[in-house]
Length: 494
Ligand SMILES: Cc1cc2nc3c(=O)[nH]c(=O)nc-3n(C[C@H](O)[C@H](O)[C@H](O)COP(=O)(O)OP(=O)(O)OC[C@H]3O[C@@H](n4cnc5c(N)ncnc54)[C@H](O)[C@@H]3O)c2cc1C
Image (cartoon, rainbow, N blue to C red; front, side):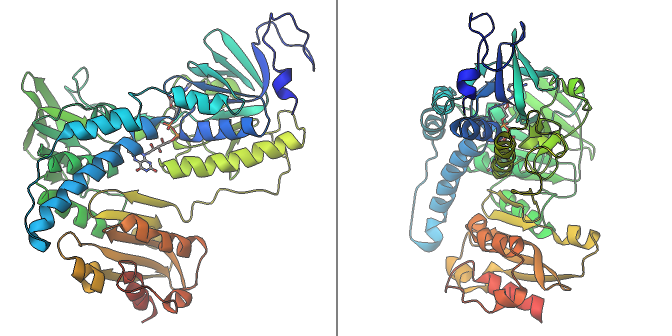
């Protein structure tokens, strides 16, 4: 593409190659990407590498939440905490081990290996090396195809990709505002452990971090307003994880809402609706995430600025010339969703570019009818507690609510050879949600050691609608955890 050469900064004295550049327009380009997190960086980088002229705008760190304050540092913490837990199990299977947790090892790995001290030189280089033009700042739509950042204005010929991610939901709890509570950001940057911690929220992030800190010796209390932790997953997963948290010393309060917070020199006290009080030196707010759409100028392109999520079609188009990827789309706040959606948007944008279709995001733009389409039937997710909970597709409840003729297969890992051999730390199960009418899986959960890895076979089964009879006719290696799938499949056929 010649677009790279065509990009021209206003006032540089050169005449534009393909039409006038308005006095206020810093540059005309093919695509502007707002937010270079997981999804945005993928889209911007690959489009630039494909030869399009791309401006990528990032106000914080290129790479986004996942590498700096999300998946990567949290999984480093979990790796460390699980090593401690395994060592503590030695006396039940292998003799004696003395464990002396040291958070500084974890903090150092996160600071030095994972985040380079929370700097993004490598990320900027990754993008610019592919030919992208990087702009640091907050991008804002100011009209169709127009994005302003500071006093610069970029005009996109093909369109704009919104990859602005999400921010933590902070509940309007009396007494909370203005206190030094933590979100995931402070937790991931932690250099020294507190003596005690209250975790507000029993979702995946709350559960994972509560277990990590408890395993490092922090006294942890957790509050979940709903009836169970991991409310989005199967009730069996909630029970398993709540039991594991309690076994690690976490005080788990479910079905009790926090009604106010007190903060003083001694820390935080959470007053719950059931009269209980939880005290912690620190408070971690983990009550969900919301799409980062504030101040994005959605109204300038005819979109509702108060929307919770950006509604996308199956090619990730939000409107004419606008694509969205990742957390803002509301299809699951996961890195793999952002990457999956970015791949679809890239495909669509490249086809628009190939069609030479200016403002091609419009209905009928590009080569409509072909290409990858987003399909979330087999959406996998993993909660990296120990036991790990992998899940894909529909839960039993979702399947029943959607009117399927549901058949359930279930087996505890303790009934399998591998679960029995594993002994301590081997708790878990496989649960299958079958559609009796079509003889396929709608969803599944694999909880236990490496539950997220066992999930892969189940994700294939749900995604490809592998007949349950085929799953029953396979050979499953002995003695593996995934062999429990075979046992659960038998329930579906009996
Ligand atoms: C503690 C924690 C653990 C997690 N663990 C996992 C996990 O194990 N597995 C998993 O799949 N997911 C995990 N996630 C979720 C995962 O991090 C996100 O789903 C993923 O980062 C979303 O990518 P994204 O591209 O939508 O947004 P982000 O990665 O959040 O990137 C958005 C970027 O846009 C920038 N931005 C926003 N607005 C503007 C603007 N107007 N102008 C310029 N820049 C802007 C932001 O600064 C940010 O860099 C975890 C999240 C957290 C918080």
